[in-house]
Image 1 (tube, rainbow, N blue to C red):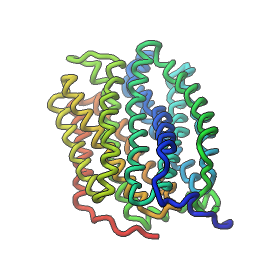
Image 2: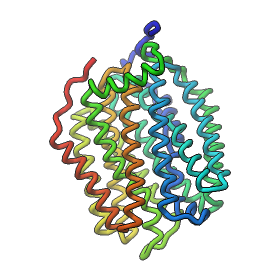
Image 3: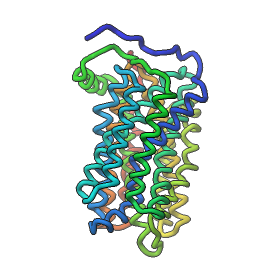
Image 4: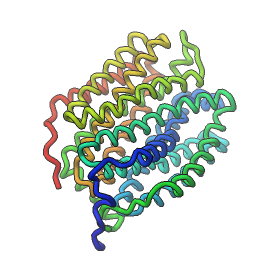
Length: 403
């Protein structure tokens, strides 16, 4: 093991500048959208390749599986290498994967390209711990909430953009345009993002990965947040993977443009992220997670009762997105209260579990939709959250962070 490096680049005695946080928020939001362009496009993709809905649904599933793999392989490097260069390299790589998706001649190649998109779209999870490390404890929740809010706006706005572009010029142009956008973003980040030296001591890559196991074993907070986050995002993915199929059935009968437009309502719900961050600063982030889970459960109740109308789906989307975002911010506020030199690896553990949960939610949602329809989807999405809330209710309060 080599010589120790400085633990942080600048002393977090005051909140970082607004312009820097806006830059990080923009980069996180625009890059994370790559993961979600495909969701409102699945019916069109299935029709293009004469495939069944569950075969097209595999695209969304493998994108999220790829993201989990990328988190495991690349995000831990943020603790020991210069982050600006790592971010730019990954943006160029995802641009190549998006171009491959746009040009895919078969569903199999499109699915493989979607996996590659997931693997390389990990920039947001390099940006969030960087922003958290710049903030003092008393404002960390607010800063994390703003950047996570940008991520979640990107998640939801990506669906809006994809639905609108596909309606005008076809699904392939969505991936082609996104590829160009990532190249432009890479150039901007190289020029505008400050250097971000590593915050932890040098260590071999294999040792870095092994340390993830040690952190899981030694930090009960990361175990708890990872399970809760996985279940929350599984439920979220159940809904968004099946929404486009629900909208195409009677009595609704709408296409990808309407499916994508529901992301606009989610953008409104993104206001919950900074609010949850401020609440986590004043109270307990763990307590805020409990409230968020109850909001999500209420959303699925609305989907079950009124999911045959656009108004009912819209109301449920507002609740589901607000609850999911509040839970995400609160969970990450809990994580970033742990030692700063482990933030990159802790975020890796959390987000790998988060997106494994999302991948399982997408896969199960597609399967349940094919076999049991909308009521089955509502039972699955709501049931997962009931399990999450029960576990949260009976689990122990956060212990003091270990150093």
